[in-house]
Length: 337
Image (tube, rainbow, N blue to C red; front, side, top):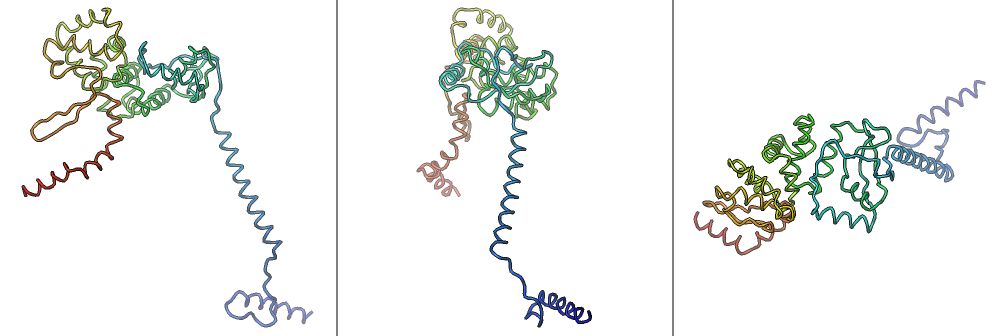
């Protein structure tokens, strides 16, 4: 027994010495190296663990992912707040209708269970797609979410905002509609993705125009803020409202498209003080240059052109830097100094 104990101590000392730098102690056991089979087993276990983790993550993702359902359009109602202005001459709607007729509904709408009507739904985003499926007799693809009133109007505004879908006056009217339903300025700012001063400006325009006139003119996609402000200014005249009432009931106004209706309205109120005479009012005007002192401004009330210019501006600036005009400007500045 004593010899065995001594040998055990020698083995233990050898193992301790083997963990130190230098040669292993005499009589120590050699370090075991994993065989190929053990390595393969270890790698296999690691791979199985990784695959199990990936499978778990996929299951969790699938469980949380919202599913698209195809439902009867008759089961849906519009949002509590209207963001779009109905228009019989809306070319954007006709383009959407043609695309869905050819390729089907690619993007589902977002709706919530109707808060007061069992078995029905209320649309948060996708009113035009809903209308298209009704006209084409198709099922409506929808994602159903649980949404509060506040969550619904914010989603409704943010879904439309980035896609240049809502025109200036539609955004102004949307702000007025939300305020009319009791939503605070924070909610309006979130829904429209603008700051509170801009919310105030939108509300000022919408309230000055009034719901009836906004709907009568329509979305006017080619008309931006400056010209709507011109119209608001023109409506301050004593006889302006009477002129507008007469215009809206005229055959020419009813036959015109939405941009032409705006032009007619501006002419009706702009003749007394010359507001509309500063430059020709045409629905196809895109932009113009204004010079005042040493300053030059490029002005446009066409929202589509503004988006195009913003996208192309970096390229245009690069082209200008290499142009003769830019080089001559640098030379002239150097000469003045």
